[in-house]
Length: 146
Length: 138
Image (cartoon, rainbow over all chains, first blue to last red; front, side, top):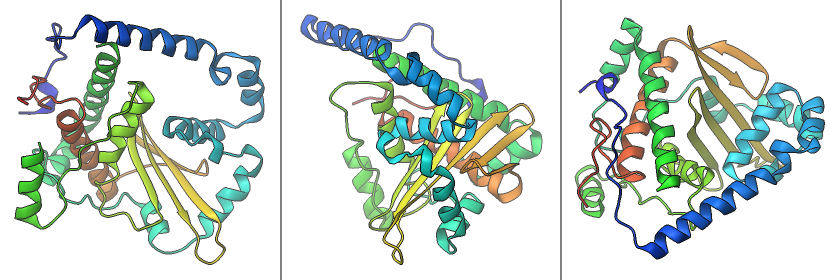
């Protein structure tokens, strides 16, 4: 079934939870909101100062590392130096950065290389990857709120 | 799922899908890390001492992050590539230096990777059929 045809279900069946679990999830949600509200990276003047210092590319790299939980690895003062070192390396990783490596068939899959080629030929690949990302965002939100 | 993974391992001789680690507290970051455990397997085995992450950051951005120790200098190396979904194609931003729209085999591989990521993440992280959205039987 083409991925384009699926719709985000409006009435997701909720998993049964005990009142203790519900309370725990509720508390976790409150903790998360408080953490977000107090996160200097998003709301304080520290963020504004960084915005003034960092280029959009540096900010994007930093945010990617935040997502990965490795914010300590990012040093804006050494960003250019790190970039030069990374870009000077030859071999496998240079190749990997030059072009997305062929995908390994680790899993039983429905979507095939032929479908990818067809999608690109027909110009429908952008719609498909957007739909996929939207669905993932929906599932994340649903999981956090459940 | 364990049976499914073991079956694939026996049939193909390759490791089956590993059960994604479940974070203690469910956050978006934790879910993305779980997804990335699947994403990092899409491009083959990861050499010892290397780290790879491939994940959907948001609706319009996919990230490929690599880290490794350079044997010659002993220094930590890393590379972050963003793939941005635009209305006229997928823009590749590599370490904040190179920007270009990808095409040809690279585009095919990325489109395939994104869709396989989606299929597997829906099944293993969210326990749902990727095409119907229905919960999978336990």
